[in-house]
Image 1 (cartoon, one colour):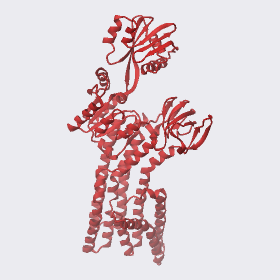
Image 2 (cartoon, rainbow, N blue to C red; image 1 turned 120 degrees about the vertical axis):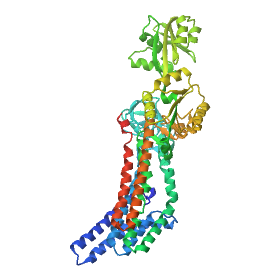
Image 3 (tube, rainbow, N blue to C red; image 1 turned 30 degrees about the horizontal axis):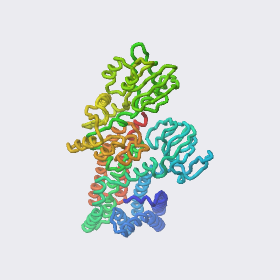
Length: 629
């Protein structure tokens, strides 16, 4: 049966359901009338005729519309079966057949609506109004469509964010599950980005709008879901190509059976069982379920063929910065000289750097906050870009920066030269001096994601042959990260075109390659691979457009989940096709032999469709262990 169009909407499915229940009641009444009033069959016949007519009308209407448009689908087979039963005067049989076939149509229509339910939910998550802050500081309620980039909006606890923006005032906790797939709320403070459709849980926020309408991250998510639903796998395109030949072949078989047996029951049963609903539902139901499971965890797939392609990937090429690592500097080592303790070194360096916005200075401040070390504001602060800073902390002059910065300020110490040559390989380092005396150094590095090693190990267990890391960073840094995540193949100091060359070389060697990057400087490599996977795509237009699959958060565990989901979806599709083929071939055989009554054929037809739907539904629960974690 052909699924009702989306334009007919939910009201159409309720109309079908009402027709099915009313017609079923009349047909059931005909059986009761014949049972309790066998001497007067007319009342039962009238009830059966009316019930069959009500149940048959939606089926006949769909078949006529198909023929009027010059298209031949499977609906015509069922319509002919119902008409044949009515023409033979067996209205009860026609009614029962119509009931079961209409039940199948209702199920498929509801399935089609379910495929769009995610989009409708996303649309509802964006509020229709927003509190825009006027020039005089008061907030006024306006339609969301009236918001423009640069407007300031006020978001109260319990409200949904009306547009993408940046927090300018206030701190809060946000539920971002609709965008990132993360079940745990996230704390937000001024300067951080927020997304339309996410829920404000605690504080009051003033947000500067940066994207509105379809340009928001939520709008891009809706576009991706629509695009994925409108694409088809090769197996689905094959079914469409041969569908127009299927109905004439079945009609020829029905004509042959009638010619040799003159048995209307065989013909009707064959026409019913030949409608390949289970076969048609085999692929789309599995893919809708898989896409739903992926979207729940913040994995957005542009084209369902990309999801199918993921099952064949045997090589993953991963960028380092922002992918295997967080992309944020963190303090990994405090190395004071003899006679200086670590807390003093951190206090002097962190206080001196307190007015700097350099990533190294921010890393020092974060560490001091974590260990409850209270820093002080420096005096006479001076920062030399690319070199270091000079400041006074509690009356002492502090120098912090490169070796060349300390040397330029007459810090001459053999330990400084030795530490620079031997101790800081693979790390970024800040060297510190106090009142002209060398105090030691602080080592910083881009922090490796805590789940990176586990995720790569899981991919190897799933049969991925090659796991490679490519980065534009130094060899020492690349070697350290590769050893941390247990990645044996890596290449450092790569320019963007060299990453593309690495991917193309792997492809030419016969590997199916997935490239994982941040979607910005890695865009050429993402496009060159079989599938490109953008990490942390929330809020990044470049990431969403350059990759074929977008991970809305930075959890690398989504990668082995994606492989497992894709392979499970392929298995389910093959199972569904086998189920559909079994019911069709088996049904055609036993109906041709006269062993299948029309009513049983209708029941058997629906049984096959329901088995396929329930089998596909198993995929929706994929990845629940990630939700729990």
